[in-house]
Image 1 (tube, rainbow, N blue to C red):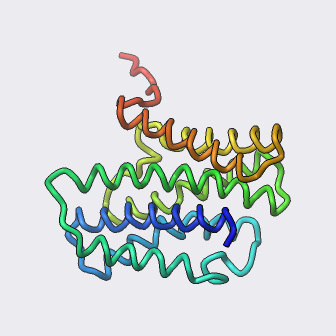
Image 2: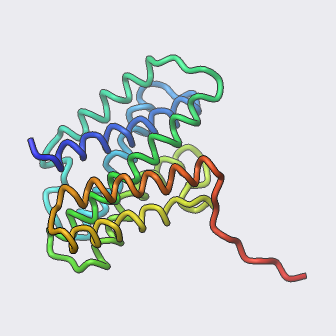
Image 3: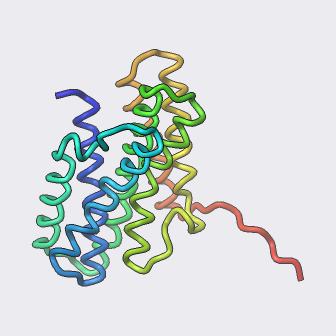
Length: 203
């Protein structure tokens, strides 16, 4: 079992929790939990693989991703939550999934032969696409389109991965450093309500 695979399973579980919790907030049935757990868990990676012409798509080649997401969905469905706890759980598990998938998406894209800029952009795609699908299905404005520091954190994660890999030529180190950095950036944004500037309206 490779280090990358372990990280992928952690990221899949984290994103699946965010999707299942979103379903819980909308009072969906267990099927809804499973669908919304799968969307962030495999959605971004699916689009990445299609853009890279990488077949079979990762979750078709290895159903472990789907199994983990569905198990998480069932576990969250039978969970008990205190008032206000579900949104915090969604936001923080989403932050972890974002950081992990941005780093791994960049790594996979580089390994597939793309240049650094394309790899970082595909890392961002891997990190944010599934969450966009999840939020749209829940009738919410996607986090990536709000004023919060979200896609920016994913972009920074990819850049840090490329920088550390270039400097050290150590793939595992690059994955760890970039994931921790991306999660920290997103975590600070959540904690201190950081946001990107909006244009001033002229009167």
